[in-house]
Image 1 (cartoon, rainbow, N blue to C red):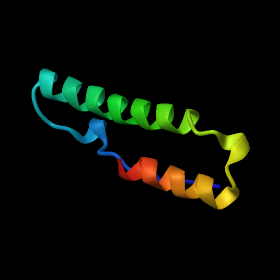
Image 2: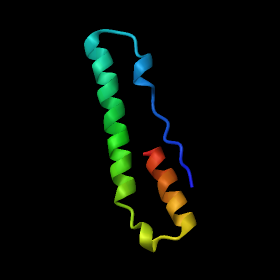
Image 3: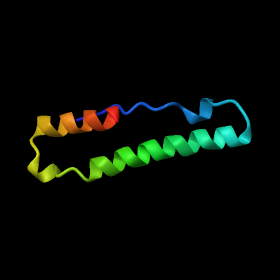
Image 4: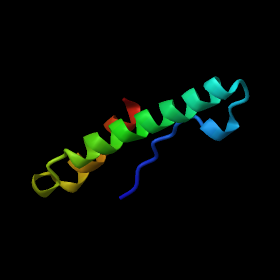
Length: 61
């Protein structure tokens, strides 16, 4: 099973050092939140398709 959780590439940000740092911080925050949500899923009790739906929902949040 795969999921694509697209986020803006912080390495592509042009601007001041503070703006660049903010872009990396924002990317980290989004990924950290999504990974935390994924890890909190009760994987042992969910069916395959239910897991896929949950993973896709995480990517939309």
